[in-house]
Amino acid sequence: MEFSTTDLSLYIKDLTETDSGVYSAEATDTEGQQTDVAKCNLHVQEAVPKPTLKLKLLQLNSSGLSCKVSVNCSVRDSWVSRTCDQVQCSQVQLSPGSDVDLSVESDNGTIFCSGSNAVSRETQSEPLTSVCKCVTLLLC
Image: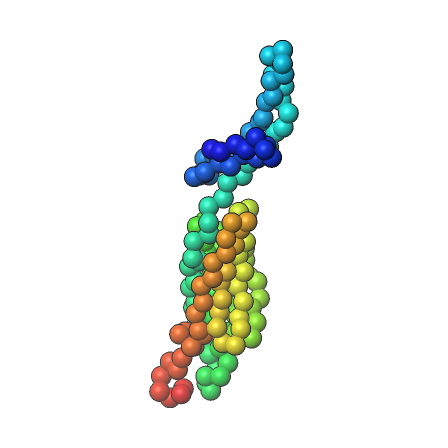
């Protein structure tokens, strides 16, 4: 830890999630009496790891131009499930009570899965063509 007597700031290094909790600052007056002068609830978050993105084919028309996929985007214990096509995604299900914000978007034939918190943001992407390809030569 580093404490600045100039601006009374406290810099705590190498925090982990187990360091989360209520911290208080005490001041001692000239007579030796201690008084709480500040309390702070510290919530430590780790950086978000790269999300896991899974696509599953739901529907492919015979021309191969229209494709619908089931998308699962997850980070640690948080996840979101959506149905997407080349243009948009609709929400199907979201895990309750998460410390990671997850989003799934479709843009120009690519699915983007992003996870973020107050510390960082990570994105994983995959083109729809990885799943939405001709099933047999007759459909190409």
